[in-house]
Image (cartoon, rainbow, N blue to C red; front, top):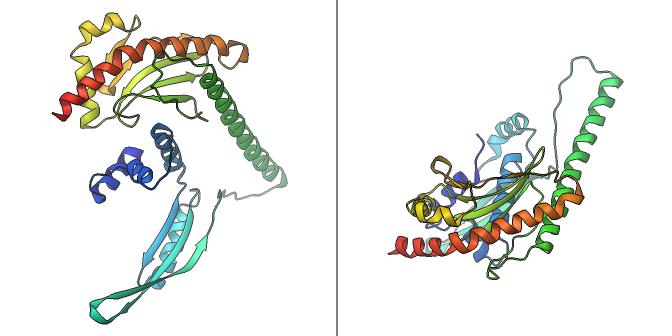
Length: 285
């Protein structure tokens, strides 16, 4: 089963008095933009990249089952450790717990390939393919980071209170809307082959649905203030805006793309942000 960030966050809220995963991280003193944090967690979830701890007061008998589990999920990129809790009963009905790390492995990346007839040609081809894939991924991430960094340096928003996000290594960048980027945000994106666009999105929960419906109920007065061609998409809790065709892979076209993003952001913020603040006040009351 592959978990999404929303599913993980629901589980976290259930055992932490309603506090979200980001709120727990923020309360621990870490400073990170919420949209970037969610993006990073979702990426690690999709790759199975996490620390797996098996903790108990008697786990030695389950070692073989754990070995089978690791073999079944060998393609996932996680670190693994077994921690045994030695529990001692003290006076006054107190317990002394002594944790001991029994086994620990740090797994950077694993791939299991089964081939009936192995030849040097096949081996060389597999190694070459892995190297090419890794090189292409690193190149794409580097180009994305450079692209979004350049946009943030170029950008001039009329609403100076907007906190700019950190550069992304993905094909999109999130800009926060009230109450925070976790509930509503503006996505600027680039997509192959030659698409550059912007849209407004709301989280699929009670608050996100309320915010979207609050705007949707006022769309007759709202639409003339938004870019021509804007559409409310209820099943996706999204306000879509017309994209443009642009060869964003060519660095010479970046300025035109950045001008487009800047125009859209400066069109959206003065219209959407005040309404969302009104919606939040109504929601809380």
